[in-house]
Length: 382
Image (cartoon, helix red, strand yellow):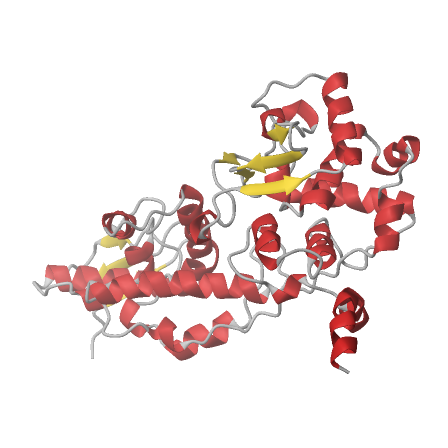
């Protein structure tokens, strides 16, 4: 059987195709990829012979290009009509996963040709597009979730009958255990002597930043977004409804749990923390709504910056981190308060809607010690 078309590939040029029904003329397929060139040729052939190009002939790349960034399929618009509002960063992050992982692997495939087996084999072996290291389980699951959304929209528009990505199970991500700092370590980290405190933390700003985190259990982004106006002199505490986005370093008028019931974060500050905040403001006055904690050129603190500083400070304090980060101070906070204050107060201070066991690192002996007030009742019953 005579071939319907043939290809020629010249160095530095896109693959060209010549059709049997148009002898002597060459067309550019606009691609250097042979599979994509075949798809282009098949489309051209159908159009020339009067056949209809159907939804079955659409590739993932054609369907999904600009899916989130340009809303090419109207996905974001429909979300907003259903009163589901997500941040620009949410869509930007998914577009990144689509552009960096999904389209490079499946872009040339027809939507109808993508199977759950293909996705499964690729998904479990995903590596970073930047350095080639294996992605974390959580990152892999986010890429899969992105793929599911795209293919679900393709199903909705009847490009495919079923969404094969729904048949691929997520990886059960292993949560990194965040051990707290011990009481002895906290004493070494925050010595009462101011000279020693500043020596360990390197500056008053960093000392105050970590003291607030120790005293309140605030998340890093919540501490980083504090301003002088958030400090309550009357009640020696702090109140905030905003945080710093750890990816963009932008100030957000919300905290992590805003969608879960807590739109604010409150905390009480020790005399030591208040003293350092007062001195920080005396050294360099800061306007009421400006950031209290700033690095070079007035930039906000992001977790990577704070954790690097923590490592240096803990080296000076003679403390081994063993994988712990600044977030471990939040775990230390709950561990110390659990059992010592009413649970409703604990939830208020943590901005949790329910008790989170993973934050409570008390040992059985710690709990027995806290239960000693009940001994008198037990003795009376004996």
